[in-house]
Image (cartoon, rainbow, N blue to C red; front, side, top):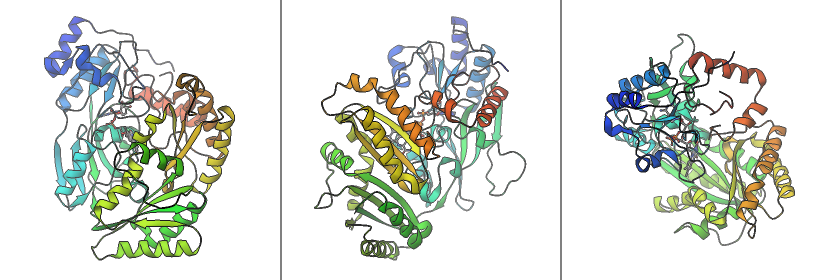
Length: 481
Ligand code: FAD
């Protein structure tokens, strides 16, 4: 089955038709006004586009896609433009229009009793959290980019973040979706029912599809009771494999109230304290590895802190932790979280970074890290590998920072070899080449090489069924579609 490649360019007639749909102010052709939509914050991906459209309603999205489809014009959906794999950025061919959902930002319905919040795709994640909080509920998806990323983008990337351990990733937090299909039809799957066994679960096709199957315009989000208290601890551990038993103990003691378990190596703590304003090492001595642990409690009765104290005492007796501090106030808790959330910011001034977001079975993390470190240092002696992230989810952010005195360009040239070595070790441990950031344009080739061939074939068939003209985000996720 061969998919027809989109070839059309936009001419004045077509442009005026798009203008008529969204209004002239929202059919952006001026290069300066387009710039925020064509590059992302790290300047890793740039694109060129004849038109950025900002529809203000589902009906306008539908008309834009129908027109684009009729003219075989490729469309790149965009929400908050914080994606890290280039999925939201058009190519430099100047043939793809960008469709921003930022103007679709209404709360459509909230049902605290049923535990649902129905929002439009352009609402920022932070605004979704606030809308839940306004009815005394929790929407637990939480990422460092939450002030800028938008829920449509979170769903399209199946975003993870720090709440996955207790609440799951975006896929587990979405009950229903409204999606405009490439031909302009509107799929209304805004399910609010916990139990609904009426055929195929279509929403799951679009969650994590990174804009390649349609444009998500609204979603039903799952709400939870708000925890009444939280205890946060930052502990030093002697070896990375101590984290496995420490996590086991934390799960045993706190059960589903264990809401975060992150791991951080010493070198990363040094970067953060060096580059993030106000960040400081909370412990007096230097240790090789750290864990940031959060336990929540449904009632304000001090149970969370008590469980944390029990955990730390029993873990210290077992030699699993060497030192630690428990936040005594909300401000201290924020300071501890700053050590985790400031990591992206702190890596940039250290020079060029080659980043990988992978997952491996939790018990394999220590062996994975030592094996992949050896492979990377073999390719680039002096490189500074950083393994950190969501230990409790098996999600390792494996970033390699250039050697201190190396020319960034020379280091960048080693990137493909370094990444190939990382993905090779990931495969040896039965891991995944993307844990939470997605495939975008960054990992299409490695996906094609590593995905089960039957699964990959099915993905291509689904793409061709829903998007026979290949207009939706071409070249993303599937390398030649
Ligand atoms: P965009 O960047 O605009 O788009 C991302 C993808 O979704 C693109 O492929 C795009 O085409 C598609 N898309 C966007 N909107 C729609 C739509 N309405 N319909 C269909 N397709 C659409 N991610 C994590 O998972 N966990 C983290 O902890 C995390 N931390 C981050 C920290 C920082 C500092 C930054 C900058 C990013 C981080 N990210 C993280 C990555 C990013 O924030 C997430 O991938 C986020 O979900 C992207 O949302 P967005 O609104 O910015 O989407």
